[in-house]
Image (tube, rainbow, N blue to C red; front, side, top):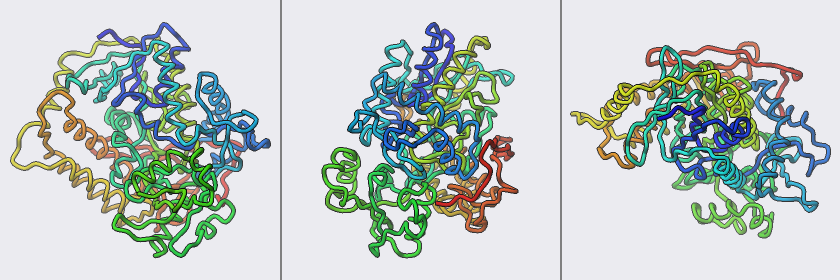
Length: 567
């Protein structure tokens, strides 16, 4: 295949914004987007609540500086302040550019872009399209990329970077429609593959495909991962499925109620109440349940999210998807009765270590969005900053790759390398005396992470999680793919996804065991205080042999000094 100037892995918001921006930067570039699903089915479409920007449409006194401070405070002071400055300063431009290319933002009465309150924010600055914001943005970006001539390779499964003496030559992927292994020689490769929180499998809001493919490929190629122990549990997942109930439901005025009928957030965040930061609200719900003040059911313990006082008109106009999901998955109409919810693994603050322009330590390899860690979220992401992150840094990484693609000469990917990759995949289909079922291992992975490396963590539990993970990795060597066909071999793809999750889970558990403090989403019951003297630093994970090796990296400070985080 003719070399591409840029190969973008992932067709969600970050990948599509990167492709659109790269084409704007240099329309002569040959750009390919590889996506495991059709781009308009990428997980960005599940983002409901909105994207933050200090437009000052709803609150006239809002400023970029206030947005910066809220983000740094929300991160529990682990975010890099220069990156946060970029995120928040670029936000109004990004929202207006999306408006100009056709994103159907909800509107205030004066026809300006509507904004709603979100957790941890001092002003209502979350711009939204009802409760389908990610979906509408994704459609808009996909349309622009098609218009500009981006090449799409849909339903391709990325397998590995092609390397020669640590020099990246391109990407090797599997065409899911044919089972054929194909080479994509490239000057640059940009990962935009989303998060890894689906490793918590049976307690996650993520789509089944959010298995950390980009992070795992980068990790195995020797590119460092950063802050992997920080996994955000969203406070309000549906009780049975873990599907997300947007923070916008609380932004519109929803109440969290325990089995005693109390609005219990008054105990934990008396000023912000239900609009405290996500880590705090998730811990509060989990505490209520653990102390016996939750509701009980065969599907698990939970609390109520009560929207009934908001009225039918508001729920139908601003939260239509939430109503539909609640009725379909829980049999509850939120107009008439509360929604049963519990915290659910939702977002990956950690990811591929990049600079502020999307570059990794490997020449020609870039990353953006949830698969990257720049780091603008630190130990805890504020609601409304995830869509903003993929848009701002997708755009920046796309621009950087477009400007730098000419620096790298493409090299051919040999037939031998493709054959070796195919042989490795075929080895999963070889019969053996003892074999394991991937579905059982996947369930056990989710259970051990949820129990031992979940919302509350403690050394003995984390060590058990580490031991469980190593046992699962050994058992994985006995996994066999029963489907030996080539066309849409979903059995093979699920095994490959499990391998990615197992590799990354070890970095999460190792980082959680090493970090002897509580900060943001990482709560150690045996080290309940934040320890800035020892742990105000990023965790860096690299692979050594077949095990994770931990290092560290300083946090970039700025005009905001460390202080206590209270709400």
